[in-house]
Image 1: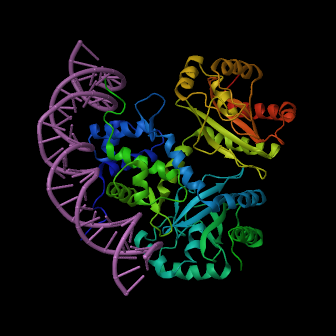
Image 2: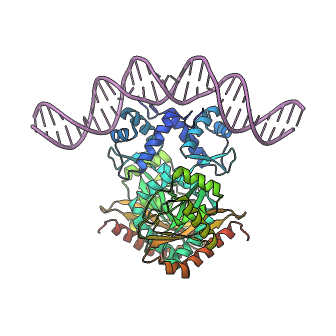
Image 3: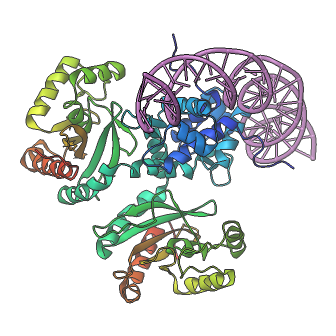
Length: 258
Length: 258
DNA sequence: AAAATAGTTTTGCAATATGAAACACTGTTT
DNA sequence: AAACAGTGTTTCATATTGCAAAACTATTTT
């Protein structure tokens, strides 16, 4: 039986291992360190790094022997981001929402069965949180994830959950499939989702769905902050409404007509 | 004589060719197209794409046979951006400056002999322009580039100019080395640089240097917009001062004490 | 000063990656 | 409907590449 791993180009695969390891180490890694972590001989690592460095994908950090990701990755990553029309269309609305709420605002996209952060507008009051452009948002314990998943075909959602699992993050994480699906019904009914410390203790997020011109939910936006500021009361009285309005504006910008 | 191109890992090198070609084609490319452009057999391209796709570095566009850059590049690019402390330190100041001026504001970094855009805050009035995160700003015809180059060791600047040349962009581009170096003297004297339609017709930009804790110019910020809004008069009367003040705030944030 | 560790280079050869050829699929033309 | 053209995918013989062991160089630690 032919496997996905058949026909993988070994040296390319290895080089990508190296890049991903470097992305996890902001302070950089040496040749021998990389070799140990990715399980390759240091002379192999050295040659792969030589090619990556020549092409700008890695660089040595401040004339040390430590390697880090290179600027070419910024360029390619940004090229991919810039090709996302929804991102530029949505940005002004996100900015406005951040100004109104003074909390961090996010835009996530539903891509290949994953919810990915593709924009984020920080406020002056922003606190450190998990969300970061390029990161995947779990569909069971983030507002942006739950609100997208709730509006996808249930069979597809179940398949994804079976693959990635309902990983426990906090005591409030929903880790039972039937309870999550029931929760998704509630989200569909009220039109928005809340992450009530389900991903990070002390953090709450409210998210609303963004639709494309056909009415499919393809993205979500959210407002997130510490529970002492993003209170349940504040969500019900003002944030949910503002969020849904903003999401609707973005949806209309994308050609959605209800 | 050992060349840089010695010991290049061929299949990695080729895969990077493919990624860079895809970054130039927002609408995606097919296997055979890629093969034609990068000069490889379609079966070779197919196998490299298979590995890149498995790892998330490319994906097929909306169930077509066209390939495009994948989300993993966003992740890695953003990891590199997020490792830049100056970027997060500067962002609130850039936001403030954009609010005050209502024009596009940029942050560029001096890295490996190049000036690279690493942040950009758009205004509602932003017009389409060359600047894009990840792109390199020419040091002879952009404000952000000239103001960094002016404060670097002259020998190093001359070396870089000899390598990349003084490429003509508009009728106002400075294309003679002696005139450019003289212009750099003027920039050092007045403490800011102006790109007066030297890179794009109809666009003007004013830029100021950002210093590190040692006083070295390592970055620059700029305000840019159409010449009808970013007038010479407005630059002299208000923009230059605001820009220098903001650049100084960022420099102080980085530990610079004059 | 000696030992240990890390980075870099060399090299023989086994394994990989290549591209030509064939096959499968899709869209266009007749 | 059949033939044709072009693209994507797969196979396979083999030439070339990439590998890691070994050796060398440089730096750090003891």
